[in-house]
Amino acid sequence: MFNRVATAEPRMEPVKSTAPQPLPLKQSTPPLFGSTLPHHGHSSPAIDAPTSVLGQDITIAGQQLVIKTKGSLLIAGHIQGDVHGETVTVGETGSVAGTITARTITVQGEVNGALKGSSVNLNATSKVEGDIVKQTLSIDEGAQFDGSVRRARDVGEVTPDLG
Image 1 (cartoon, helix red, strand yellow):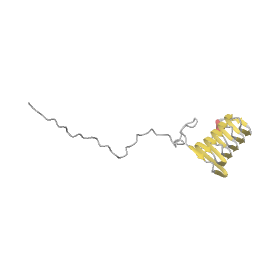
Image 2: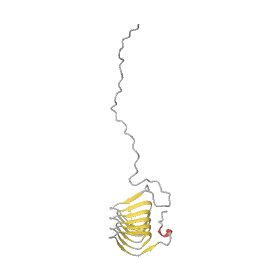
Image 3: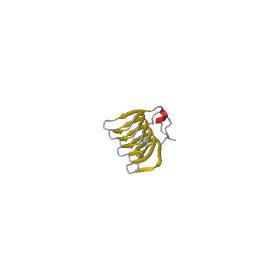
Image 4: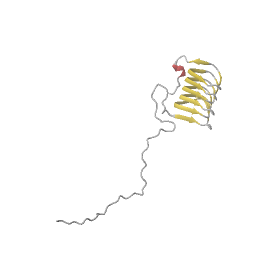
């Protein structure tokens, strides 16, 4: 018969690399202020609409100045001029001396001028001197408002010029 002596073959162990291994891919996260892709709808702005921020240290002034944005604008600084946008928020430290025309306007700071919007919200910390033309209006307890309010005759009266 056959007699065979079993010898162990040398086994190759996998060598562990000391090179850094790639991290597993994560789901992409949305940008801080939303994407820069334009929104092509006729309803309120999408969640991913871009947001521009004018910080506390900024003052913008000029004769016949008009600021326009197709996205959202947060004003924490001071503007002397008119503002047009999809959504305009005047922060607690912000102030605007001019007309604000937007689909949605939220005031937490000061405005000395007219507000023209589909939806106008005056928060408790707001101080507004000027007339309001709106489709809907909410005024929180504590808000200071001196002016008149009237319902928009048509949508064109509260539609911002974003061109």
